[in-house]
Image (tube, rainbow, N blue to C red; front, side, top):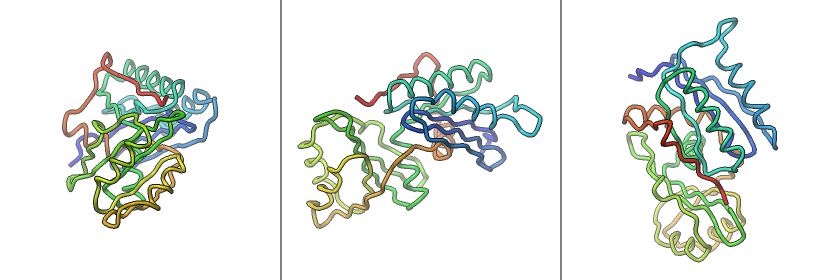
Length: 224
């Protein structure tokens, strides 16, 4: 049984922002596309989601936030909001990789538990990660996140077997799918935005495994 009845999650790390609140096994959330007005969007969302009728929520059990990889300013906004909420609520903080959020979204939509993430970050570099979900619903993959060149991506892809989803923001994915090995099946999931509702299952898992983050140890990760 989940003993954490209220978990607040927030993300503003790319061109969108969203918040979600788990309360009594029900997830309520708000989402909006953003350009450069993340603060104008996410602060009213937080106020709205913490307000129940005419009563403001005065207790939550944990705060989950995305630590990137993401855009510099918007990732900082996410972390600053989490830090401010921590000072008010004094509850555990859960740092979640943006790539883990993508993997959870693919699982929610397509029930695929092996995910390749490929984000074009600069002229010759790509952010890469592979995430795997076990039978207990725990994701593994943060240690695979790295910035690499195209030739290394092809090498890593050729080492994989089985059924995978691949997602990202580069035309390189089409090239990979066209030239993949016969024993590797790649489902192309068209990713656009992160969503805070997909942070809730990850946060529950991290809380159960006591994987929380101290305020002084928050380390943001930026797309180059």
